Length: 505
Image (cartoon, rainbow, N blue to C red; front, top):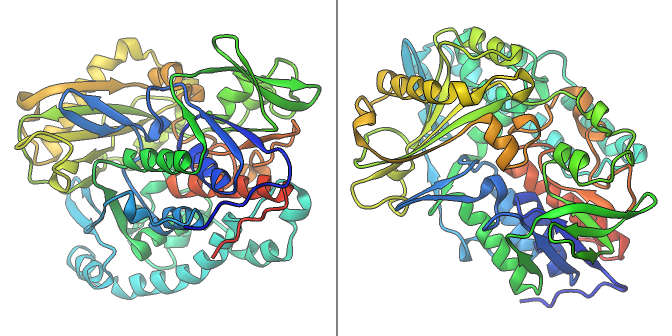
């Protein structure tokens, strides 16, 4: 193993939050020889990528889809390690099953299998699938390079490399419109665009550049980590400590300390002050700006201006430990009969009578999550964020019952209520109050064009010197792979300040 390089002058880095962005940044900086301390308020690292233990059953709190595994692999390689020495991956294929009221379709990263499935459900669209693979590949290769760049200055935004990618980034129309170049049937286009709602938009308004999301799924596949995706966070923490960094849990930051417009360190909840040369914020961006920065210090991201930003939806979560196995795919997305009305309800802050939901049946792949013969069932329903003022104390139990009724009616789990041993609910209010997610918007700031690249909060925070951002609220955006990239971009910025550039492959 190579020896880490030592910075040429003091480099004491404090990272607020041990989520995937903070951990990826910390492991890279620790490998470069920086004195890195990660401060995590929870009992263990991960944030929304942490483990949830309910008795003998183990769940991921948040992300369950691992896309673009090569991003994660590169982070470990940049630390002179192999991800497979820390994690056991298995590819999920078919990646997921989509269930509509009148048909099911299994989505595969195997191109021949996918062509056969499309021929079965939507005969005559095979040529459109080939065109989708071919044309979106070229567009993706331009966009992915843009995601790895720093946009903390207007000069970087107007770089020659970005200008060549602009036609791909700022395509006319929406994802749904762009998919119309390949598929005329609207239901096929929904099959390739449902991910848009997690970016804070419907497929009919989500910028066409985000067609890269279904493309990367089909091109690079979907993976599961044995033990759950929370194991990635645990592995990253292990690398940080191997590199001489420090990871401290059960330690809440009360305030980012400043001198004028310069961040100087943090004050902990217990009153202790710790000085740092650089501070990296991995807490939810808008929560941090409202709660961790001295009042009246910010202008561009003041509480009043933040409130006017556009945000993603929230999620209603139900985690079930059940006493049997079910013959259902690992990942399942079940669509409301009127999908457009369901999305409109979310956008307008209403609870739909009939909703779409995601169901993970991970025990069909991973027998470490539950006792023999039993299963973990993870359920997620996209719902309005807390700008809606929905009374979740009043709605929680009824919504839980409606979700279980929908599971019994729309999936092979027809009697699931008879088999529940343990359960936990997380509502949008709990996301906000217990996980510090601003307005419960679990996928952070929306990804409309006015909140992307240079127009998203910068990795080198523009309002306070020596303060940096990682996570879904900064460039390049939400979702595990892009959050890992945010950690890399920020680590590169800090390393360059100490004349130690990170050499990517």
